[in-house]
Every structure is written in C-alpha cells, then in structure tokens.
Image (cartoon, rainbow, N blue to C red; front, side):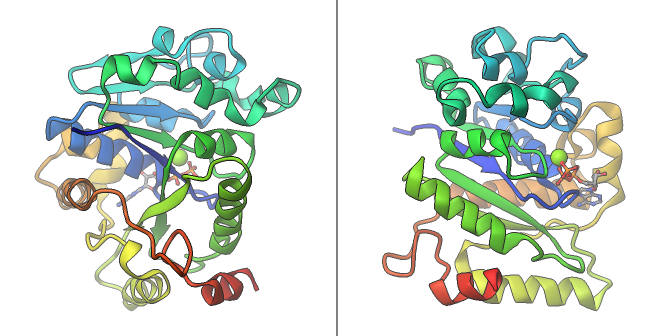
Length: 279
Ligand code: ATP
Ligand code: MG
C-alpha cells in the first residue's frame, strides 16, 4: 500500500536548481513506473517549459487554481506517467490578489485535497517554487509534507538557508504540523574544483543524513534540455546529469520519507546549528 508523497522544492536563493531538480526527479520516477504530478508555482513557468506543457498567458494554470477560478482537474496536462499543472505569467500577480482571499495560505491545499489526488492515484507530487518565501511558497508548504532543498555547490551556497529553515519551522508550528525537510540535494557539483568539494562537505557536516548521497554534477546537457521542451532524463538519458538525477530519484524513492531525529527536531538538524545558521 502506498500513499502519495507531496514534495515541495524550495530555496529562496535563485538559480540553485529547484526547477531542474523538480522536473528531473519527476521524470526519472515516471520512467520508473511511478505516476507523478509536477505543479508549477513559479510565474517564470520554467518547470512547465521543461516538461513540454503549454503555458501561454490565459492557459488554465496554477493561477486559476489558486484564485478558485477553476479546478485542478481542468488544468491538468500530460500523459503516460508524467503530468503537469502549468504556470503562466498570470501567476505574477497572484501573491497580491490572494491576500484578501479566505484561507489564502491553503488555496493549493484545498484545490488538491478534494478527491483530485486520490482519483488520479499519483505516487508523487512535486511543487516547484519561485525564489522567494512569499504566499506562493507558503501555499506549497502547507500542501506538502516533504521539502527538498537543492543547494548549489558554489560560493554562498548556504546564504539564506537559515531563513528558509526558520520559515519551515514557522509553517510547521502554525500551519502544517507534517512539514519537514526530507532531503537536501547538492546540485551543479563541479568535480574539477576544490570549492564544490568543500561546499559538499560543509553541507554534509551541517545537515547529516538528510543530504542525499547522490550529487548532481554540473553538465551542459542539463542546461540544454529545457530548450527542447524536455527534461535531461528524456533528452539525453546517458548523460552524466541524467544518470545522476535517476540515481537521486531512486535513492529518494528507496529510502522513503526521511525519518527525523526524535529529539533534535523534525529535520535532523540540531538547535545549535539552527542558531548558527540564523546568526
Ligand atoms: P529560479 O530560482 O530562477 O527558479 P532554479 O532554482 O529553479 O532557479 P534552475 O532553473 O533549475 O534553478 O537552474 C538555474 C540554471 O542553471 C538553469 O539555466 C539551468 O539550466 C542550469 N542548471 C541547473 N542544474 C544544472 C546542472 N546540473 N548543470 C548545468 N546547468 C544546470
Ligand atoms: Mg525555478
């Protein structure tokens, strides 16, 4: 018996590989026989592009779902095992438009938890967030149980992570008791540089076992794929980037949800480390 795993991909730092990770983990799991839904909550619509979903302005999308103007069902695109609720540029105004709506933090939750997920029997839902901690990201986090944080193996990798952890804690406390970090994924790892190795080591030291063993290398194929409306997993399955995402997806699937440490807090990070990151 399996139930759906609802996963938000978040990091308010831009360009760290959120979208790339969301769509490629999704595509890899779909290729492995899982039924997967990608929800694009970023007005940039990059996840929609990468899975080949139509997302011109006016297309029924996450924007209409959040505003309550249409059902999730009406926005669903895709076939086989991989589906998408796209985002259009219309979403850019949503954060402001949602402020005055009832249950503004739970608009996505309410739109999905009404029989829609059960009806389709999804195994995974990945929600791609914009690089901010606003109402769109909050809607993703009240909806999901798991958060995956991609961390780019570059300078300032941990910049803002303390604030992100603080927000996750706040949402867990006040809006969604189930929310926790289920994985940290190291992205754009360049094996030729000492820096990438140092960042990876630092992240593993700080976060421990919640960090996935598989690391995503920097690979030109990964950045080319969206130009073809494809994930790298489908565009060039034999590339190092694609193989790394498949391996990370298998790891995520096999180990299941990350079980938090019973005494040090829900994500396996000690309070001292929170304090250090925050300070
Ligand atoms: P944003 O904050 O703008 O939403 P993001 O966190 O979603 O960004 P991506 O769009 O996934 O980040 O990636 C940023 C850029 O880096 C993109 O151009 C993407 O193609 C490229 N990129 C991501 N992962 C890799 C990789 N492993 N190797 C090479 N390029 C990559
Ligand atoms: Mg993105």
